[in-house]
Image 1: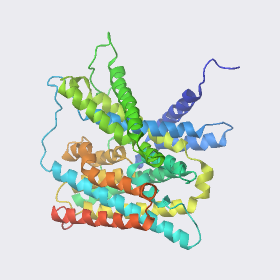
Image 2: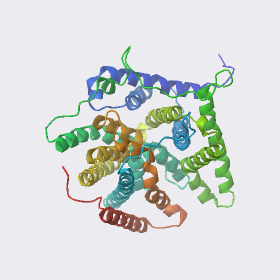
Image 3: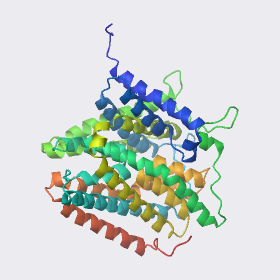
Image 4: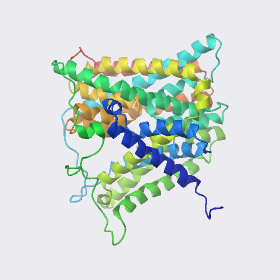
Length: 458
């Protein structure tokens, strides 16, 4: 029977939703998932990937790639709007003044920068080694190490999709596989790392005391629960959630228009690459919208809690869509280089974060685990690890997490351009590696000059 409308997108979203709930149920019941705090989106994603590739179901993988791309941009837009969210009474955002926040943001930004550079150097070096032994990979294959681990699935997909236009076959899928490998490190290595850090810092040999709510992932009946947010509009006019979502949708529309206008004078090569930076343009437009609303005194209409929920919602669906978009045939074809590069990237990331985290003057465990989760997954995975050490997020590190991107921007933005330098400027890979080595050196000098690289504290 023919349906009156196309249900393809709805069915795809429904499948993502179904297996997200399957993952939620599995997390609530299975102690293994609780032990490593594997989020429902990852559990459901891998269960769904297995089921849907075994069952006789015809799926449009490109739809899941599209969901990943769009959810990634939505998450950045909502982050940008949250930055200008106003207090209901004053119209101003309440930011606690905490000693050391600036130092923490500087440290976090520099660590992200040098870790990204190290990941890129490791990935590219291994591509050369594979070529030496007769396995030819696309020149930018190694850059999926920092894109997948540090930048996450949305960025890996965005650049991968663009690179396919330059002859890198299945680049989008390969990028998503690297991002999934990063998440495995974030939790299977991250959680034991948190417990190790706590034992070393306390010196009492005790593991972290994780609440039942965090382990199982839901609030029990009749328990005290956190508020999702506040209503800023009256439902007799427009539902508050609809209003917050409309702000995101409007910003996304403006972002698309902005990118098209920005691309007009440039060549096809630059235009293609620019679409890979849509997330950043979306963040800028969102910050501009928030600033404009503040100038007119109406930024109190942006609710911080609801926008944070939109960010979290988009990231959960982003991750499960990432896993759904993986093509098993591509995994099999590139299994050896993916495993080798991922393992090397995970090891160098772990070594660097532990080394520099131990040498921080204050909040060393908290900052170390936040950055570890961020440098292997996303900010959400970093915050999840932080909650083990700081259950109520009372430390200034929780505040630093919200503005960490500003500290990292001087390193990350040039690095993203650098990763595309082969297509933009025709650079050879070894030229790009030389610049990344320079970035790594500059970061180390900054850490030394600012006294954020000292003797081990635990």
